[in-house]
Amino acid sequence: MTVKHFDLASDIDHCSMCATCTYVCPVFRRTRMEGHTARGHIHLIDAFLLRPGGVVNTDGTIAVSDAPKITREFEDMLDCCLRCYKCLDVCPSGISTVNIFEDGRAEIARRRLLPKLSDTITSLILASRTRLHVAARLGWLGQMLLSLFWRPKHVSRGDESLGSARRGADVRGRSAFKSPADDAFWFAGDIAVPKIAPRFFLGSDFARARAPRRKKALVAATNAGAVSGASLEEMRDSIVRRERRQRVGYLVDCMTDTLYPAVAEATVKVLEAAGCEVVIPEDAGCCGAPLLGTGDSAGFARMAKATRDLFMSLDCDYIIASNSTCAKTMKFVYPERLGDGFNEFSERVRMDFEVMTLNLDKLRIEKLDELIGWHDPCHQRYAYGVYREPRELLRMCAHYNERAGENECCGFGGTFCVDFPKMAQGMAADKAAFLRDNPEKEIATTCPACLYYLNQFSANEGAGRRAVHLSEIVLRSISERA
Image 1: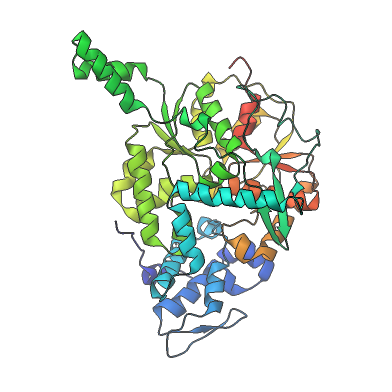
Image 2: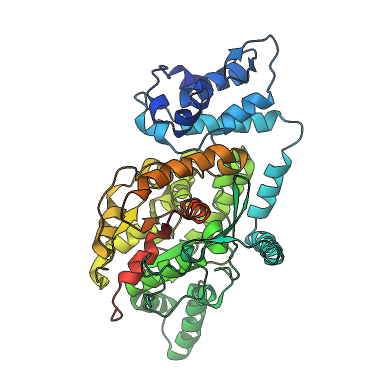
């Protein structure tokens, strides 16, 4: 399968260099370096990949040379990007800035004699959920040994004033999975290593009970019909009549699966309380977004095709994710990059809260007597393009007042927080500054990466705040009669 690459020269020529993107760029606000803005990235890609060649200086300025030479400084400039989509959101020319950056990385990867070791390892692990579980389990064992000598820092542990995450709010019983409320971190300089869940979601009895069974049901019905004399078409119609509930396929993303399995459990419980049939294929892999970010276009295409083929075989009304990055990738990036063969699949993709909102009439929500804040994941607001719906759902479930700074990036940005940890921690501190003066002790969001980065700062600084997933808030608000 071929990945569509955009016409870099044409897209770059449409850039008017107006600098509108400069003033919304979280990285530029910290570094004040032109090379870190969308306009600067476009200029760099133009100089290095489309022109005879160039050399980037450490201050971000460009010195043109006669021979093309991709330097480490150039790669660092291009990598110093959160992929937050804010530049795309404000661009008056409508340039797909993020696509330009991704195509630039793909071109760099193509020109390398050997792939980067970190990119190769990432591709190998994410290509299989089994490999991811093995790697995560080894990490968990290492953390257990590490905790004998080095205690992690916990998020608001034992502080009952921080909401009711453990207040018997699980309408189907207390969760046995790790929740964001259980977050703990080891800090090595500016890098925070999160505590891996002792039990993963996929592979658990809870997930196995929701594995696809449609084919088994059809076989059983066929066998029964053979005895009763019913035709195959009549038997299929009978199955459809018994399955009038919305059938929702759930892609459990890598972070939710291994770091916050209680989020997946909460999502399933809410949707089932709303009358949906939730189907969880345990052999689903990664959506491929991390590979596209590193320039591995072929690996991205393989993962996208596998995801599409698996979920389309399940005959789902909707395909959901609890991670805004996965949702925007499946809904918008797949058809944009891989063509019309993904349109039918992408039209069914929704964020988890969207399907919850469609079924509000079936949920018995009792508003919590708690004041809960909100954090906009960049990919939900600027890439997926949803602003109002999650706020309205939160306002139904708890007391919520919109605050300044809700759309400020937390600083995670995928590999950004690993490659540029000091800058990422600075952004987390900026985000915390918006939260610190507000009375909310819990902050809801829809992205496990944001959960991780907001909670790691709270644990390290004792900020007295805790990030939770919106699905957990909705679950806590559901009456026990649901």
